Length: 167
Image (cartoon, rainbow, N blue to C red; front, side, top):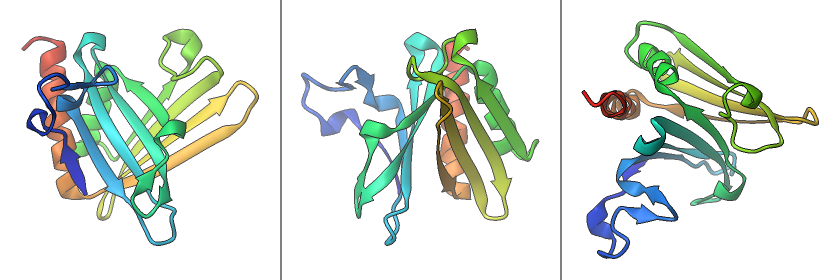
C-alpha cells in the first residue's frame, strides 16, 4: 500500500507542514504481515537540503510501525541518480555508503556509517538499509517494492532532481 499526503486532508494552519516536514513531498509504502515482521518506508524530498531522505521502520502491530526507532539515509543528487539507474533497468544494483565523518549523511552522532543497497529482483525491487554505530552494533531493515510502486518512486526521484537543479 502506498500514499501521498495531500494538503487538502489538513486544516489551513498546518497545510503542508507537520513537525517541520513538507508532507506534500513524502511517498510512503507500507508492507505489514501477519507475523509482525513487516516494514514501512518513506521517501521525503527536502528541497531546502537538496536531498531525498529514505526512512524505514519495523512493524510493531498489525497497522503500526516503529518510526521512533527508524533508520534514515540522506540521498544527494548522485545517490538519487544511482537508484534511478536501477529503477530504469540500466543497472541491477546500487550500493550506497555514507560515512558521517566525510559528509554528515548519517542520522545521528553515534553512527559510524550507513549503507543502502537497492537491487532489482524477479518481481520488483529490494531496499536494505544498514546502520553501524560507533560501538560496532549493526541495525538493518529491508523492504521490497513492486513494479508499480517503483514507478511512483522513479517519478518522484526524477522530479526531485529537476527541482534540485531548478530545471
